[in-house]
Image 1 (cartoon, one colour):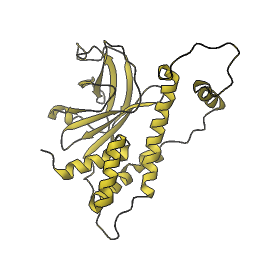
Image 2 (cartoon, rainbow, N blue to C red):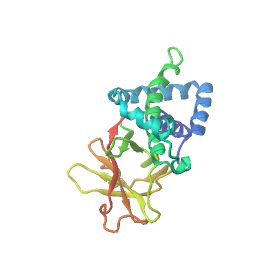
Image 3 (cartoon, rainbow, N blue to C red):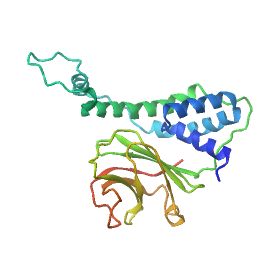
Image 4 (cartoon, rainbow, N blue to C red):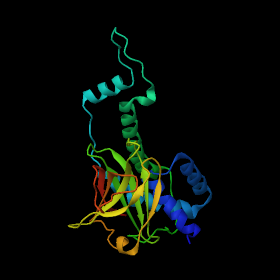
Length: 243
């Protein structure tokens, strides 16, 4: 059974990773304002994950990227011939750029939140023992992070959260895999592609969760791969990292 302290610790970890929705973020921020101990826990997680932001190099996008954005958002001059009218939510390019923006915003918030949250003077820091959590950013081949994953070692569970829209045919599903070093993929389960899900980890699989492994998502039949190995295309993948 989860204790309030354990739940608060996981909430702080997910806040620092930028995977909480707006309502959950607001609730945690309100609790932090009232509870100094919770504020210290959140700061510990932000300090622990801040190096992940520093590892991301600054990239200046070429001019054609901004031209493409303006074209996709309809900000450039239109040709004399009236184009076919489409609804904005059917514009796949718009969804793609909004997803990229969401991923960048989450990383920026992770780095800048350290500026406003400070612990009480001379108060001891409450932190989880290193190694209690493992995280992964599961990205597509073009670099866009489609899901994030947080492995809670003590509670033997994995939380996978979407960060970008993934379009799948109605008769297909997403399945999560653990790929240990020099070993065959291990099926972790089918999960919904468009909202957070929790996957419980058996002891034999939990024992193989470490910073040397990789998480991957493949496209499979609704019930998952019938062979015990990926049968569809790999949609995204990312290495596991200890916090």
